[in-house]
Amino acid sequence: MPGAVVTLSSRGATTWEDGVMTTPGPQLLAFPDRKQDGRFPVKDETGKLLAHISVKWMGTSFTAADADDQPLCAASSGAMGLSSLWKATGPAQEPLLSVKKSWTGTSAVVALERGGTFSLRGSPWRRDFAVTDAEGGPLVTAVPQSSGWSFHPHDYAVQQIQPIFHLAEMVAVVQIWRMVKKQEGAAGVVGIGAIGAAGA
Image (cartoon, rainbow, N blue to C red; front, side, top):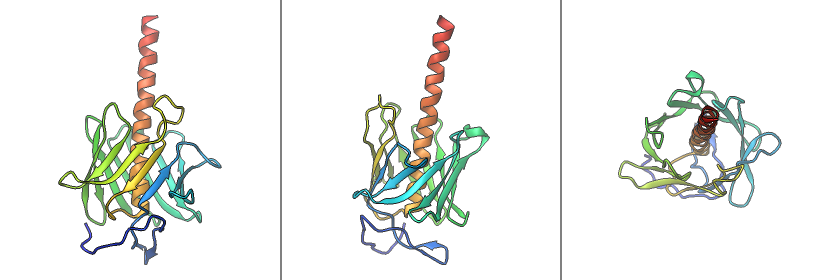
């Protein structure tokens, strides 16, 4: 974690100097689960567009660009999405972070390339999750804004409680976990359908 005290900005964008991110991401972000112009938007609390995310059709990778359509981050998982490890890269395709899902699927380890390892804690029956420090203190929280029965159940309001993560890192972590949960949901629907067909 950085040693310097950094003032949180709820509207600030990540800045880059010589390819290095220097400003923490916004304190509040919205991750709507509906595409706009073919991409998933990321907005601040005023509704201003900060980034947009393009997801590959198999749901195993994505790319994100900032509001000016400049590359922000990208991530993918191996083994056709069966791998528990997601790796993310930054705007110049340099390593950014990794997310290693636990065997239970309810938690993960987030490791930043620039240094720092954190826990991502979810739940088998809830859609909200949090990124915590080594002592379990919340750094980032993500709360769903739609019903679990909605056609868009992974619509998140995200709050960065401590100024740790840059915008690209926040987008990568939230989108990776959202895709993990979507994959699990799709697998569950397929499994229920198979059981129903077998019993018919």
